[in-house]
Image (tube, rainbow, N blue to C red; front, side, top):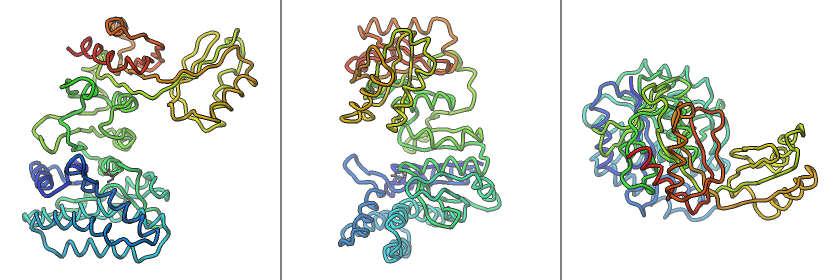
Length: 448
Ligand code: ASP
């Protein structure tokens, strides 16, 4: 059994939904389908979820919501009419929305319940469209499917008991269409995942039914080995491991939120990223192990917006607890750090720039100076991280020298190297100004 998930652009209009149906029907193993809400039809369009959030804002603020409601319903109506489905479906969707609006529940519930209507509508439309083609298909609400989540509105997390429930989907016949993005708490309350959360639904359903493959359809042919905005027409990655995917998405690679894949990873379900607009392309496989790719660079990730908090103190290496106390100061300020390379007399902590500003920054610098009695503490902003990712690369002779050659040729100074103990990545801190240039040279070095 395969679980197939389609993102917002794949269900944005009737043309896209027809492609979705063709893809589903093309392979009899594609039995469970998870859908997002209709996404943007063009770059200046608005996603259905954003229309619904706007509607919720009006309802919660006791404002006139007619225009916002019409914007939502017009989009659903257009899709339903173009697919030549019954008007009753438009009415069913509208009634559900009206019911939520008139329930006068808490603001949190109203927002979550309205947000869920995008995915819910997509799933109802797709199952009705499949039925109109004489295919045995059914809409399955997440409650019925058994997606049980924590009661954190807008931030739900899937609870483990979902897995057992979801396995029961095997007992059902035909194609099952499940809306993404929301589940139900143990008390039966509708709760949504964070934005982009339909991927979480896809992944948990794939894990629950123990799928042979989880296919995630988006609008790109595959995962690229480098950001296509930096290198034009970069090579596609045909296969990578979960660990590589995680490292790549950490540093600015955004095919989708890597955390969403965790349930599939844990259950060791292979994942394939494919393109709804070009389903014949092989896509990118994400697997638990990939021996063929061991010891090579799989991708280059890069991201700007980092700063280094640099601390130096003579004989730091003999001072037990220094690192802990430094990190404790950050913890007290609720700051999460990214990396912390250290030497004998110094330690750098790399943070996202937005973590440190204004008074908070002054307070932290003063505490470090006083409590740790350091010789020097300073902050360097405007840094970028460039990361080479590939399992086993750190134990492969010569890769680091290839990398540093690219830095030399690009004339970009390496301010920091962090190879760490992970076998998966090698990270370089550079001035943001040189990031794009060095990424292009690294691409040439490793992929051309
Ligand atoms: N529709 C939701 C959003 O726009 C969830 C998703 O598409 O994955 O964030």
